[in-house]
Length: 571
Image (cartoon, rainbow, N blue to C red):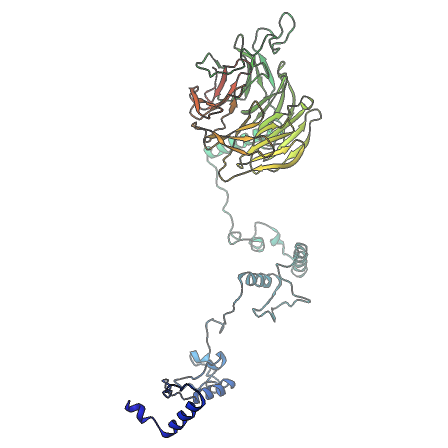
């Protein structure tokens, strides 16, 4: 209070009276303001502004510099010329390089590489500022860089430089001899190219024998045409094992029996093995029943042979077809069964006559065919579709032998071809873990099915009512897709329990559509109920992988299976 009273003066009283008269509310008493910052001498600021405008060097006796000097001012010589024998000190310059001072410049790596390569290629380059051209050679017009020149211009300049070198410095005779040091120095392309190679050492007897065997093996492989998609010189032959090719009435041995009819429209699960066909020396990769009648069974094996077996009477091997030089992957009957197709790892597709065993024609694109199929329409039995290892589906006209169409959209080897929608469309699966639907004859995908959860589907089968597709997925389950317009996945139907990861086990239906069947990697054959999706039965069929399974088209409780143990079993 004493401070307030001491700071109160009569003048303040007059001011207060005027304020009280001018406004109804009197202002509160205010204390005088005072800065808490220390006093600053602004003389140095004025001096720094004056010193910054000058370019004179700094006084080395100063211990405090009141402004930011430039590099020229900071490293300028003190007074007069420098003594030539004086030691190099910081006062003689900011030497961060053996040639002097190099200032840092912000240059993008691409721009630096461009100018660096341009300098070493053409003899000039732009400095980091982009305002000047440095180098021995100067461009006549707008300077070009190595990255904005066309390939033709590069070639022209390279030829021009070679001509100039040839005109200016003719090569001495020793430079034309590859054995001379002069030639090595002129033609070296790498740090190691200038070094002379040591004289070849003598081969030992073991090394010489190995080299000769390797050369002979390579020549034999080239003679066979392997690796180039050429036709191999494999002798095509067939052997008939039956008693006679025609009976007393002149009927062929492939003629189906006239009284062959379905004994019952309702299918039943088989219970025991009734016969085994043993004749293949290696694993059996595929089996197919004779269309509509099933009195014959065709089998393809990894021993490069195809055999056909009698199912109804003698149950013996009727004929062996030998025309492939490597394992046979797939087989497919024509509609009447008189002919069939075979695809082998020798890159050939062969069209056989079932009765005589002769090869009618052979097709090849140089790639391995994984699946072969004839168009099911009666008027298109001459149209062949093959899924190849080079991601294509190739269509041949077997009458002319020409490729009429290629369906090239897949990203992996094509595994299956399945005709749907009255044979107007077909569905293909591939190693790219997708399904694609095609219009026959039009190489444009009309439906593409690919989901993150999908796996590769090496086998697809059509339901007898033609409304569903069963796809064997390599995540140990069978997925069901509709064959209608949208080809949607039926999430309510899923068949699992078997182990097929890594194996292209075949999936199939019973003729009445009540059961779904599939082989597995442990040699079993699994049966599921179509409606409830429950496992109905499991048969232990083979010692190795049970790769194929077919339901007999007429005998509704008979099933044939094949495996990698080389045995075909009839249940």
